[in-house]
Length: 321
Image (tube, rainbow, N blue to C red):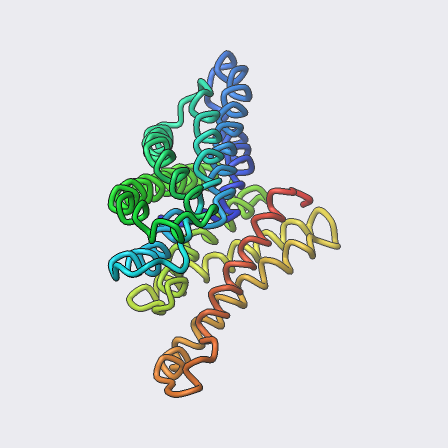
């Protein structure tokens, strides 16, 4: 399962690794003694990568889209520029430094290290061009040279930024692959019919549900993934009910805060299914005139599902139950 843009879900690695370790009773004592150190080192490095991803508020793909939508057409017109903007310049060096700090850590994470190195290298090549054009834009030099420098440097800038976008997406993909592997391992290793098992199951099926909702996040709808989305959501519900039962066996109060977030996520998913089945999304897409300016229901539903999922993962990371 791959979601191109990391959410807070990836911070759950500490939970999933800990759960996975709990289920391993077959290792030798010598190996067991070293596992906490190895696992902790991997968590630290992984979380450094996640922090790097989450610190990018505007992705480089978004920066490229903006530049190609506004700057490139203006430069092609050949007229004196009235405005010129470069996005993400300060993000370049900050992101590269974060990546390099993670890469310097000795514990290998095969799924992410190579993409992270490629991302860092691409940022290093973009940096000089971006810095030059950022100073040019900030000083409004384009008003005095009629955009000459921007026209000269723009093709190289677009080419370098395009390579960064490719590397950025590869980096996100690497994080997602590692995240999925750890989540699956934790779920499979957890002792069945325990709080740990149901907690790991909520993470696993929650992420599987989010993966099948990718069309909703893109504004297109569930499409061919509708039945799979429903199945993953139903499994998530099964895990949630098991979790609630087991926590109440230990304490009659249960874990109400966690269940509130779980039920919020399930409710958001079921609204998506309802609006898919009753044609609400299609009705919104068919709007004309002033009604077309209204925010579509699918956008609200996507935001609700994403927010409830993030709330759930944050709660799981706190580990209050």
